[in-house]
Image 1 (tube, rainbow, N blue to C red):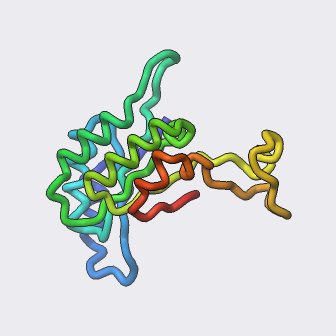
Image 2: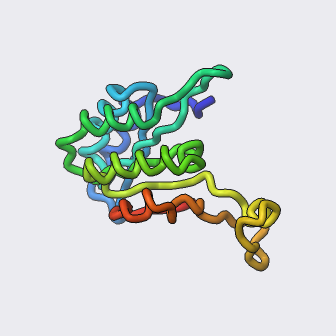
Image 3: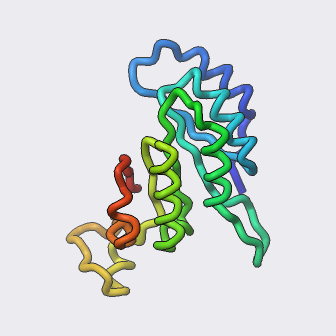
Length: 165
């Protein structure tokens, strides 16, 4: 369930009051369709320095599928003429699949997306339990990046900024 808000119009009205702003200002947008996300991008773009596109899965029932790659492709086609940097927030489930992650990164590179925000890593202690990586000292709450960035298909494609949570 998403956090309730007062909506896009309310947000844009408040963002329009922050000119000039002393630090870079980014807006995080999302939606249930490419049209909704692209409309939000256009609405906030005039008032911020960059826009983070959140491709989070809507509340699905068991057995339903979410195609974040198709959604991203449609969003990027609709915002092709953007004037501000776009950062794509990679869904947690996508990070866990090297093929899906590689495809998402490739779509972003092709569309000239300026950055990726990646979450969904496993805790240091969880990695140690699975013996995929030795734990760091005093890092019980730390998170490590997914090893999928080093897969042959993903790593060479990464020519844009990546921020890991």
